[in-house]
Image 1 (tube, rainbow, N blue to C red):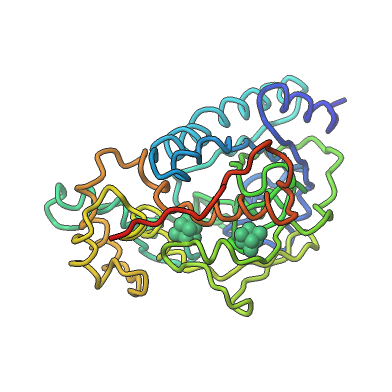
Image 2: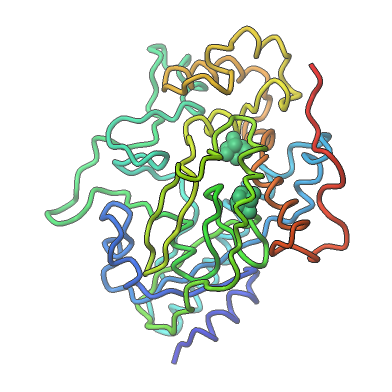
Length: 354
Ligand code: SF4
Ligand code: SF4
């Protein structure tokens, strides 16, 4: 008989760092377009595999001298290679036992609803669009956060692709909580992990929802270190959802501003772009500019010429929320205290003087 213990041992042996298991009834109140029960109605269990982001890939960004390794290796490499390989291996083991393994990796798929802000309709993906809009000749490309023309394949179905909320699914598997920064926090790695999932018709003993000491200290370090001012410091600006009876609350982040800021940072945190580019494009590059779709496309176009390899440089230049959170959780009695012999941060974080 297939048991949770067998699954966890196999997952960890294959290379996952954490394995948590939830029951599908924890999604009974999840909105349809995000609800994995509609994707696989006979599924009984959801399995979450978490893969640590080695703290060392943040080192070059922390010192301000090497930005490429975190986004290319820890983020892209884990999403594209390490995690899918382990997930696939676990799926084979489960199917050898006679149960189905619906594997679900981090995906670039699109829904009729924006994976950014949950809005319906035609939502552009400016960071992708800017690259190909010129070659299309009409200033418009098909790169969007949504697939607005998609229709249900039969009555009663939701239109594909059904996307799941990764962080809330991880909570449903009991591995951690959502921090104020909206990042998933676990006791083992704080905010430093990526996750993948597997749905199966095997009825497995679920883990309890995380109920240990609060992982988020509400210190607002993430908000203070965000170069885009995307995370509110006002505690009333929050979003709360219920996952299987557990309340999850996070700051109401300006996701579109983050979308621009995490790739471009700003004048003081992006050493790859001359200061005058930021000065001349304040209307859409200032952290106080309203991030309309037009402004985001303009921002991406203004900056793309300076980034020789998009994947390896995106996400690295701010990372303020992640590194700020790690350093706080190491130093102020948080879950990462004592995990490393030396702290991530030894002094003030850098800020360019220009
Ligand atoms: S930096 Fe502080 S407030 Fe932000 S997620 Fe981490 S612990 Fe929570
Ligand atoms: S990823 Fe960067 S821009 Fe986005 S919230 Fe975190 S620090 Fe701010």
